[in-house]
Amino acid sequence: MILQRLRSETKEAHQALEKLIIPRIKNIRSNEDYISLLNLFYGYFKPVEGLLYQHLSDKEVPAFSERRKSGSIVNDIQSAGGESTDVVCTNLPSISNSNEAMGAMYVMEGSTLGGKIISKMIQQALSLPTDESVSFFKGYGESSDEMWASFTHALDHHTTDPQQQDQIAEAANNTFVKFKNWVEHNTVARQN
Image 1: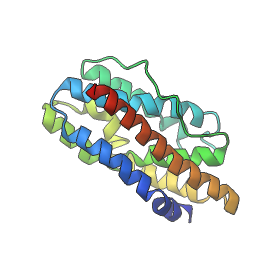
Image 2: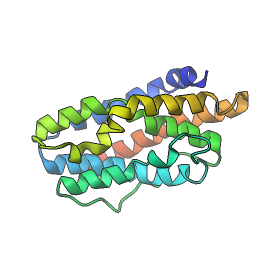
Image 3: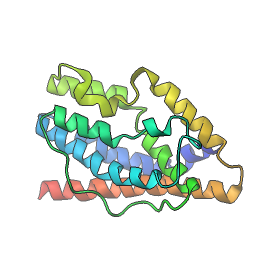
Image 4: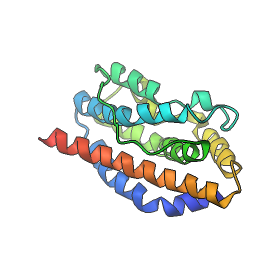
């Protein structure tokens, strides 16, 4: 199963990204901090989603059209009193076919798994009264586990060809690495 392979082969890149993101989340003290974090995610997710939509549809991934995350990020930014950035990442992972798109989507969909914990951390830090401002981190709410299961089922059945599975794994790893690079670049820029 490709899912186990992806977990193993992307573990290092995933952990490197988390080492940058988790401190940013823990250090949220104001709406401005939160809006900055959301814009960081938006700047990466928006262009990557554009690439995914060129190669995937509801045919390959159940409820694909409902899995767009950048709209939720914009809603959260506005709900927190901010505006979405025009600055987006241009150093994106290569996504030129459905295999690479599935690899990138593994990263994007995986971002919903820790969302329940993250959304509670943010709500407590900022005393947010409703879930409106944390819809991105809440993912699919009560349906998050079901949506993850339907995605991973589609992923595991996307292809049995070893070369195509290599493309999926390489794209997933590259998506983590490029996201980490984006976060690093914006963390340095923010500190200067």
